[in-house]
Length: 118
Image (cartoon, rainbow, N blue to C red; front, side, top):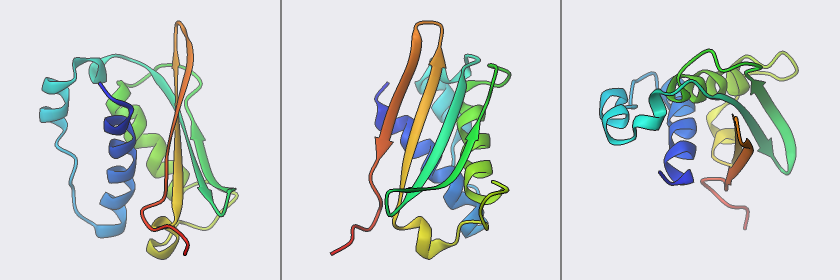
C-alpha cells in the first residue's frame, strides 16, 4: 500500500467534517488493503505556513489503522485544545504529516497542501 492512500484517508477524514458528508469507503478500503484492519497507533500533525496547526496521537494501538487515522485526523483538525477548529480556507493550505508506530519502528509520511502559495 502506498503512503498516498494513508494520507488520502487523513485528508478525507477532515473533508468529511468540513463538507458534512461521508466520503470514506471503509469496506472497500479494508478489502483492498487488509493492513488497514490491523491495530496500529498513529499520529497526525497538521502544518500551516510550516507551523503546527493541530496534532493528535495514539499512545497504544487500540483501533484499526483505518480508524486510528480517521480519528486522529479529525482530532488534530477540530479538537486540538491549542487551536481553534480548522476552517476550509486553512485546510486548503495545510500540510499533513502521518506517523505510524509499528513494531519495527515509526514511519512518517507527509502530504503537501492542496493549494500552494504563489
